[in-house]
Image (cartoon, rainbow, N blue to C red; front, top):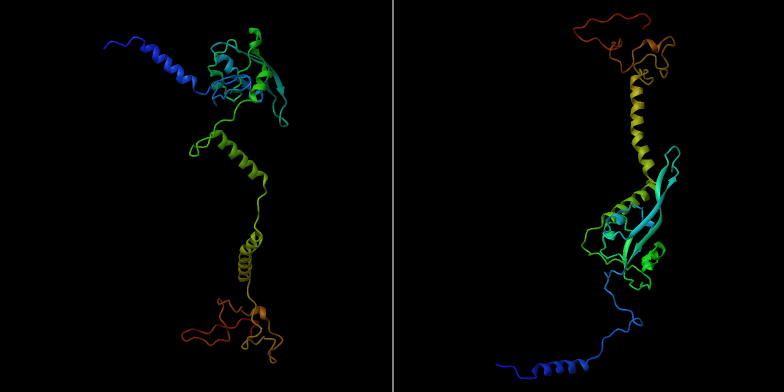
Length: 265
């Protein structure tokens, strides 16, 4: 079927009429700032405190638009007898945005998180030579970097945060004095008490026991009024010593009586 002459013009006029009745969505820039996406690549901000002048960003840049100058300084020893160390001090960090193609390689390869994307995009200049911004300007853009998005609640804790937390807990444990229980000393003394008593009793059992003064069969008992004063207790065997026979005990059948020793009664 052949198209009707003028149908295309009618469709175009219909689209125009529908658009004329809608509300305009034009943003009045620069009076109204645009709502940019969170990952907008505007300019590169520099966090100077994290920069170690490792030169990785300058070497990996495909356009060679990063310029870094530094010098070395000697750091004195931290402890007596230690050796001195040298460190690199940043003198210049500049980025030529007339050559930058916003690939983000310098930000990805930075091992110490010194470079970040900033959503700022209003840095147009009338002279191309003014598009090379030094570290002072890059530091100002650093404060416009948005906060990173929140992590997934079920995600694993980052290794950097876990290591820092463990180090902080270890330092806190070293600084806090150990808490002793109030009864710890008493328990220690109670544990040592029986040991000492047992040792004393062992020493006492090793010594010979003196004869019991209250024995009624002993003629040398001081409590007996008829005991002679000439008895010598040192010549009598001890009560617990069975190596020598008792002369006062009756002789057992089948055994011969032992003769009395001199000095015994």
